[in-house]
Length: 444
Picture 1 (tube, one colour):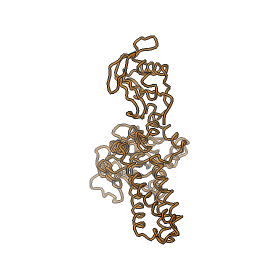
Picture 2 (cartoon, rainbow, N blue to C red):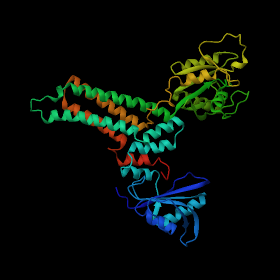
Picture 3 (cartoon, rainbow, N blue to C red):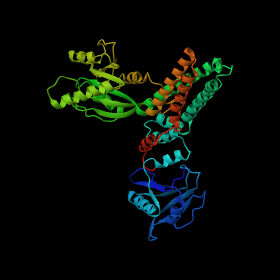
């Protein structure tokens, strides 16, 4: 694809910094760069230059270089300007660049052009945004693996296997009048089962990657003054919530994003669950229950000094069908000879007692994201495509086993191939591309 316009954007984050970068991409990039610097920009040279306004007054000085097509990120002619990082100064330089023939880029337009010009596929383009937005080291590593093509290669190999399988099935349809029965070949059944196993494996890794990308919703619930906010502060590592001896300090849901053992967690500290006539507290409790029903993990905190009360029992009855863990808080305030209940964990956020065990319990059902190098940092659309491909492959296997109908089997294989190809962008619509790239930051 050849774009007729030249785009430009500030590629560094907003704010004051030592260096600010402006990217220019498109057919007029070299012309814009040479007019801005009033000099020639030879290929493969990093150059120190002055940057001039339309009156040839120096705006700034810094580094620039020129990358000709197709040897650039976008696959187009690209000029990159590295100036001082003052916001006003960068705006002046960007304004001058637009005067010289460029226009402001849309969000994600540089990555979109890289995709359209076959420099990266769609999964790699999305990995760029995921890498920038990584919430943990494990997420950053997973995003980089996708950017390097690991996820795309898995999908491409699976698609190639399905295409190979389709060739057998469609040959049986094309030569139906011949005496050669392609569908009786046992290799077809084995290859189909291998494709099914592969898509299950990729889908499992993708679903784990969704947790790595989006995080686990952990909700802290319980009566007022049960120690929920203290636990939030302990896990977050700072005073994220106000903690006092007055019950009901938390009236709304407090949220913090943290990482435990490389696992991203969205921790929700909720209002104390109690009967009240206060309309503000009632709204807080309503929101608390909404968060509880959306949670992946619920920690029900009980003050260990009185133990489980009738009010606690009422909450437990409402949580019976949910995935909750009973946690007895303020363990430092009870005597060591007190008999402790075996149905929960005892913790103290004051001296750290029981906290390692609690963290182990929270993370026990999750894999070690820091060590697993097969995690795919998947998006919701990737998982949907994999699930639809799995359904089509299962249906193809059922047809092959029960009826041997080549026509129906061929159609299911075609649908599976198309669903998988949408992940890398081989089959896409303009609406899908627009939706994906509009979520990128400007300058990427």
